[in-house]
Length: 267
Image 1 (tube, rainbow, N blue to C red):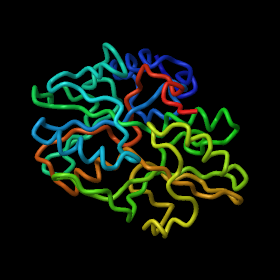
Image 2 (cartoon, one colour):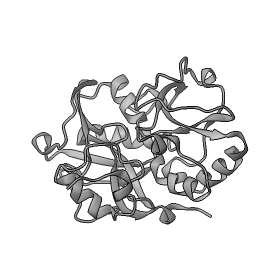
Image 3 (cartoon, helix red, strand yellow):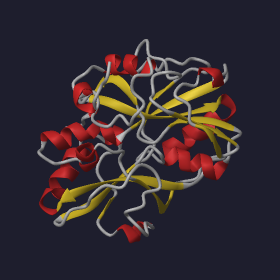
Image 4 (tube, helix red, strand yellow):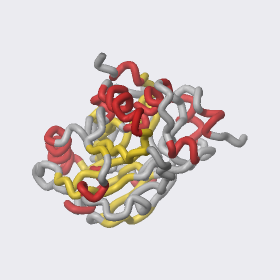
């Protein structure tokens, strides 16, 4: 069966995970299962897990933790019962000594009993609130991955982990910027309010048409680039800190949980 983002927009998290597990969806997950929380992911050997936990604690805007698995257990029990993080994301990245080694569609062959997974809030989760407020989300409109940029903003170092923050960008009409800020501020567990509005060069982005991750999108006249903290930040930390082994989601290819966006709204 052939699926489109439109046909999966109202599907449950469990249904979308089953489709992904069968290998029937390998594209980015923005716009799928609207209203369900999506999660970034990083998997590390237990020996490195505490350092990353400390890194996430010191950098909660780009790394808001939603769940942590037991070593060797592939089920994220707090956010999705009976899920399997080895098969339920459309695409993964396998890292060795800080270098990207492969991008498989499942990681069963890489799984080990000492691996700990961190599920991290994703800004795709607040896109339903933006859409409900009548604010367009350009990468959904254009059917591409969200643009993400490695900035010049350093994260707080923790143990062996360091690196600069990654931010995602959405073009917002000038008059809608205050509403976009208010909508997303309600969801601090999935990155919350924007961290930067306007001038890309102020955060180290020399060419907004060339994102470091994801795809470029159209910025129309009368729109402002708005930047949110991004859960690809751990991948920048992996490249900087060079753990011997790590697995992450491929940017834009998220884990879709059973939790509702409203479960994480603060007001």
